[in-house]
Amino acid sequence: MKRLDPTAIVLLAGISAALHIGKLPPALPVLRDALQVSLVQAGFLLSIVQLAGMTLGLAMGAAADSIGPRRTMVLGCLILAIASLLGGAAQTPEALLALRAAEGAGFLLAALPAPGLIRRLVEPSRLPSLMGLWGAYMPFGTATALLLGPAVIALAGWPGWWWLLGGISLLMAFAMWTVVPASADRRPAAAIATGQGRITRTLRAGGPWLASVAFAVYSAQWLTVVGFLPTIYAQAGLPVAYAAVATALAAAVNMVGNIASGRLLQRGVRAPALLQSGYLAMGLGAMVAFAPWAEGGAAVAAVRYLGILMFSMVGGLIPGTLFSLAVRVAPDDSTVSTTVGWMQQWSAFGQFAGPPLAAWVAARAGAGTRSGG
Image (cartoon, rainbow, N blue to C red; front, top):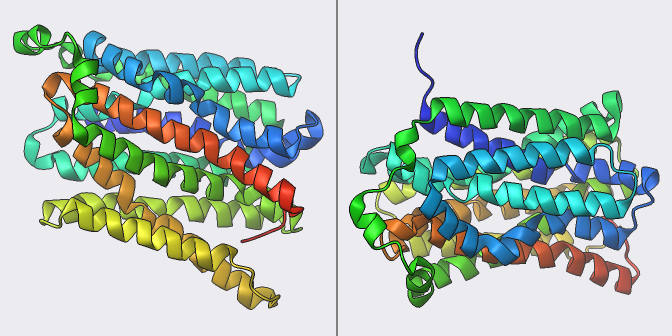
């Protein structure tokens, strides 16, 4: 029997972790009725999963460099499984918030060691393209959850949706432990000798700071726009099936930019050019999607949605490029996960602050859940 590709298992483990980020938006309309979740609480449910990343990303990255990326990812998948299985039994918004915070810790442990682990598993010539694929783990997992979530919730309720994803994470923990070679956790003697002070070395370098702030700017906008789309569509009276497909597509097209970034980097396109293109597209797309257009029925709705697609698709150049940069701007080989952890910490801050801030602004403006898409 042919052995499974360890790199594919790493990618699938990342996707399984991203499912937990994307599982909440399709459940929000149901949770608002079942648990009496307010709009601002919904914003924190979307963002609190990033609490661990916002506070512990750097430390967890350093720990992953010390104990090994494979072991760290297995631990992350197990935490996600346990928190999700318990979350399905939550009876109050506060309990669900606490377990979402635990899921955030699991997500961080399951995701941040992956670039360094992939680097150990493949030859250097394949690294840019695989980093582009890795950058797509979040939009792919999120889009899958957005697309399948409404159907599963309709059949088994939101608790069944939580339990299903908990089971998937448990399966991925087993696959990571059995398929990815244990040798991937070993470090050469030189890396062990230079392991002390990896946090200090990372923070003293300029590259990790630039990549991290760039990721925060991107992630705050992306999660806010995509995360609230199901609620916006539901409040606008659109059918659940339409809202699910439209939101899933908006998340899925982000993969195009991620994968393209790896190909373009391999062909010699400079990283700053890709980042500038991504940020420009996000700005223009957001202006088209949320500008105060005069009411124009289906035509204006279509134009708004095209703006959201441009926002997500071309914006996808940013994470793919930044993941490729992370393994290059790390001070040395023993600080790759630490650098990715710092980048994840800033990304988590953007995702934590973005949705509640958007909800607060909407509530203050009296717009509430007024549709922009």
